[in-house]
Length: 187
Image 1: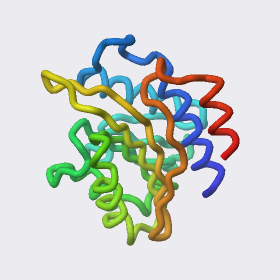
Image 2 (image 1 turned 90 degrees about the horizontal axis):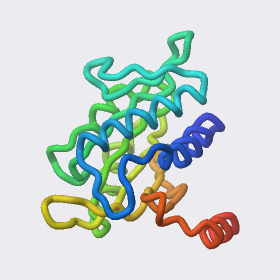
Image 3 (image 1 turned 135 degrees about the horizontal axis):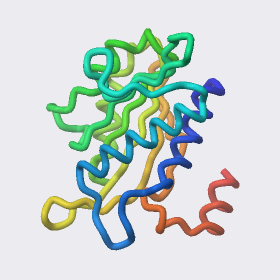
Image 4 (image 1 turned 180 degrees about the vertical axis):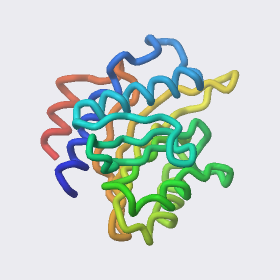
């Protein structure tokens, strides 16, 4: 994994908690999710010396581009579970993957469907020329189509291989700082 990819993963996982759009005991809705992800992308781009352009290049959710027009990453995010056949964002990213340093996908799935989602991503990305960084937020369904977030998982796909790079609580108030830091830093 290259430094630019490691830096992007680190930034996303940190900035994810910044200005989180809900408070403890509340649920996040689709519009708050979309806005939050857009703000996270903009902040990550800024910290990496790039700019964020939304709904560009054939309606890609975001394009992070350097001033010399090199594309850091194409970004897609999807509120629907990534294991559904109707979710084609990975296919859209795959079509453009040779024009950027890496591609980025952000999505949800129910905790018990993680393996199905990861297998789908592995199948699609097996022939890609550039890496995929996949941020997957797991959740438990709640009444009234609400979701209780559990984990933010970061996967890295490259050279027909995949790796779980990081796993952390998805909600900022679920972090047990001392316990979480000591366990994660020891790995």
